[in-house]
Image (cartoon, rainbow, N blue to C red; front, side, top):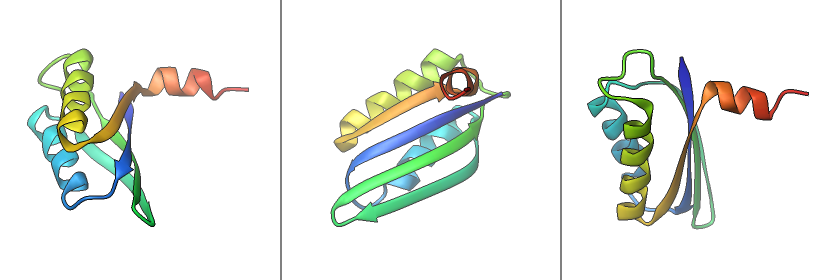
Length: 89
């Protein structure tokens, strides 16, 4: 099982490091990352393996959302199944 994590906000030092550290604390393995900085806007998409989480999915989502609030960025976590259903034609 995987999840898609998106991060959007003003670019600051350490966004990728903090988000990936929080994932590691919850045993979510980062499989792929893409990020861009356009002027001062930071945008990142991560695909994380959640099959070995040491908590439930809601805890991962709530933890990353709270981390985003602390950093002043918007973090959204979506289960891969929901993502696939939303983007299936």
